Length: 172
Image 1 (spheres, rainbow, N blue to C red):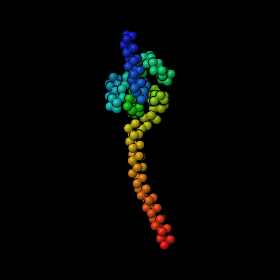
Image 2: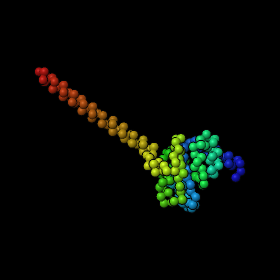
Image 3: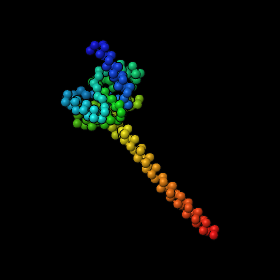
Image 4: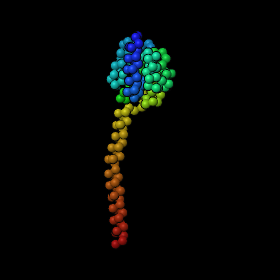
């Protein structure tokens, strides 16, 4: 590979790392071409980009971003990067689901918003709620609180009126 091609790849990877909310490192050695195509298809359906890059080029991209120390330990053997641009949890769900039927796919590590997760963290990451699910739950919670407030206010006001009425009757 020529130097200018390598520099271009390093620049592209650095940009993708910078734009993504979650970066996942996987080992794919032993996956057939058809299985790799299936994996990429599953990633695309959830908006994740999956890319095979040489470890030395990934290290160079990480150096350019100043985060080389965080993910360097996962750059051994064959490495592919999964970039979660919109949802940092989506790659974990795909990796876990796909690795159930394909033992050749192995999760190495992930970095989400600067926090690094090791190889044993995949079950935890895959069970986390996505950004959309979190927003939906928060909206539902706010909606239930707001909709119950008038009932609470009405009940308190009714009780206050009844108490004042009782006091007024006793004084008559």
